[in-house]
Image (tube, rainbow, N blue to C red):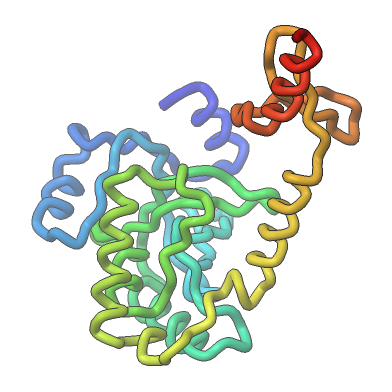
Length: 237
């Protein structure tokens, strides 16, 4: 366990252990017994009992230290309250793990302090099981949260459920939760703002824009400054 991980565990007073594919023999054996299980490398593991299921992708667990932690299941998005299949998704997750002991492979923590991670019950990836039943969407807005291997496993599970027309895919045109929440509109606005920025060419050839704080923010895409570069070459002639 890294120092950062140890400090995080101490901060939440949770029961944490490092899970390593070579060290966790029983967990690895279980995962290898089924093709519908995702790859786990060296991660921070939190163990606890599920005390409540809020939605089809959010639960609360109680650790051995009697601390309550809110966990958002990573890389999936369940129907929101007010959408069709909300109850079906939440009830299925509750049937699977409510009142049971689970392990959470922690990816990060959100701004509200909730954990974002993959939940395992008896060595099986719970999110993957929900995808296979067509009860959640594969959430790809933050692709860095998954390895390429796990991204493909999740994607394939969703494609299979879609082809079978089960769960949310029984509808002809189901509305993804992020569209229902308006995230797609926010992303479109953010993308629009990006192109409306004024980009400048730095003294060493870097391309940047000036943030509201006055700080220079360099970007990898130097095509943003392509017009400036062409104009400078014209002036030199």
